[in-house]
Length: 467
Image (cartoon, rainbow, N blue to C red; front, side, top):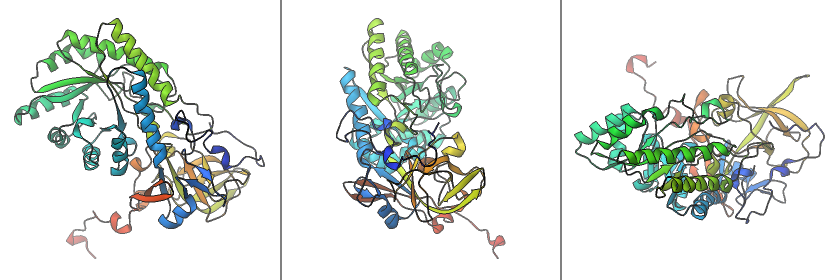
């Protein structure tokens, strides 16, 4: 839960700043609250990437997603380099782009040597547009359409096959198109539970994702018989926003058992993808493992298990999303109206809400916030930060500890890089916000703010309805 400070305590928004030297390579971004470059300038305003947040709002408007390039690149490098440090075999980190799929983010991940995990034709098209090599794109999903499978086949990416219907459809498509040697991975459900929100647990047996492990004999026999397929690997994923370490160790061991069994059927599996799911620090009480603490035991278990089974080391893949991108971004809002409900709470409203961040109303997710134009002022009030949408449940933060606010103040919500823009909507016909990337005092648009014209751009009005 968010810590509760009684009114009048001399805390301020500065306590959320990075706790260590930004140049320390051991700082794990997922364990910080604000981006690594965050600081307070001489105007008592929040700076990120050398840019004053209040100035960014003046220039680009609000709500505004602000992405810190250094924090994102640091997370990418830590994943990439830690695997190289602890795993003697080949490794490949993939960015799970469902967290935030846009051309600029995919391009940054690819420039750091990461591949891209996609879950739709749109995400695949985005990664290809960003210049990502198809050999480094892995296409997931439990109900890929025919059009998406055709796009995947034409692009040459690796298809992570999720179920029997997809597997048989893929074989049929390949035969119709006279294709062969199609790279696939098989997604299996490991039956491993972890403590996270029920909607983001994917490894337990009661899940819509993956083949049942009880079907391995039938599955491996079928795949071996399909000359059009080249089964290069196995995939599993146990969930998201996970702080526990043991489930990932258990998963690594189970996957090596599957790898050994596949060999009994003549399948030359060379890759294991252990998924992602490492959590981040959304609130002060959150205590996720560092990237290194997540990677190291997985590497150790794979090596130990392969040695015990007398198997060569596979190429080891993982697909972090949230822990790469979430801390890199904040969302800046402008404060407007407020309402005091005596003896209950005070509502402070901002110019966005559930359309740009649906996670609180969907998952009851918790966030922290600061007033960017008065970072050092003491936190004297506990308020509910309300969105502007026509929903009583549109509450961004139920218990936000802030200084006394005024209309026009800039409220910054922390840790909004994952599943905010990617789940954003036009509810109440609000245009989706702009996004900027900041680095070395420079800000560049990576997503333009939608306009009212954009909102009606796909509307059609039949002649008989015109007035």
